[in-house]
Length: 277
Image (cartoon, rainbow, N blue to C red):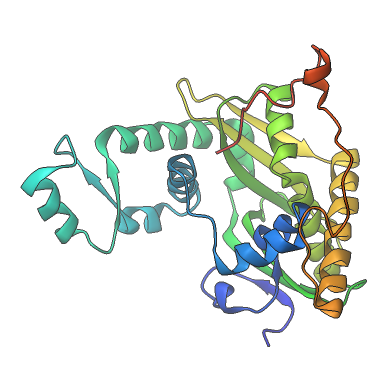
C-alpha cells in the first residue's frame, strides 16, 4: 500500500493506488448502482472534455503538452494524407489546427492574467495527495492541479467553461460537484499537513476573448461540499459493509415531484444547460 503523503508528479503511479478518488466517489450522488457501473465502465470523454484536458496540460505541463499532442494542418480529416498522419503520430493525441490555436489562445489568456501568474510563479503541477480519512478509515487520494509555493498552502484548479459570469459559473460548478471535490482535497491536505488548503478556481472561457476569472472557494461553499462528500463516504462504507448497491429507488416507491420550472417559477435557472468543460 502506498504510504499517506504528498507526492510530486512522477513519484508514484497514481492510477495504481487502490484508494477512494473523487472522480469515482461522485457517482454515489446518483446511486450506489451508478457508482458500481462507473467503476467498470468509465465515462468516455466528450469533445469539450478533451479540449479541457488539452488546455489544462498546455497551461500546467507545457513540456508534456508538446510531446503528447500533434497538430494536423491538412484540412479535413479524411483520405490518405490524414491516414498517413495518424500512422506517424499513433502515440499522440491529435488536434486540428483551429483547435490548437484555441488551446494556445486560452493558455495565453490564463498565463497573462496577473492574479494567476502570481500563484504560478513557483510550485508543482499534478500533485498527488494520499491520506486516510479519519472518520471512515478509508484510504483516499486526490490530484491537485497546481500546488503553489509562491503563496503557501494554495491550490489552483483550472476549469474551462462557456462563461465566467459569477452566477452562471457557480451554477455549473455546483452541478458538477466541484465544491465537494475542493472540500475533499482540502481535508486530505489538512490531514497530512495540519494546515488548511486555500482553493482558487481559475476559470477561462472557451470562446474569444477567453475571459479569465479567479474564484476564491471558501466558507459556505466548502462547508456545503464537506457535508455532501462526507455523506457519500458514509454511503460507500455502508454499501461495502452490506454488499448492497441499490439504484435510485433503493427498493422503495418514490413520490413524483415536479421541478420548479414546470410550476411556472420564472426565477429557476437550474436547467439552462450551461456546463463547465
